[in-house]
Image 1 (tube, rainbow, N blue to C red):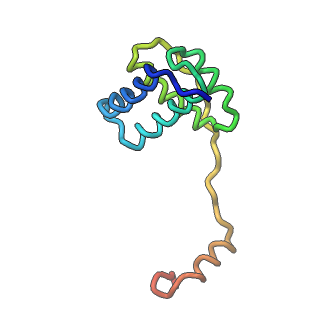
Image 2 (cartoon, rainbow, N blue to C red):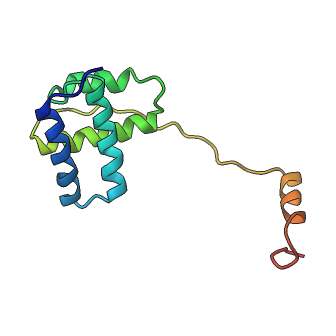
Length: 119
């Protein structure tokens, strides 16, 4: 795979500064930068919102939650460059929380020391 064009690579660096100026945390900025960099490495033209939509839609290994993060990343990038784009909607998969069985709870309690045990 080829490297992204120099102008696109420069805009990714500018994106990091823009994201920080907009008040996003370092972790959010880094995550969004990595997603945009992945798009660039896959030869997605970041100046073309339709190409970005297609890339996000065809990433089968991404969950809908990860697709939402990618959309947020590109939305901020598009805002920075004043690109017009209508973000697609991905409904986040709702999963039930893990609820341990009674036997698992008893094993956990019995495996603790007297100092932190409930007995």
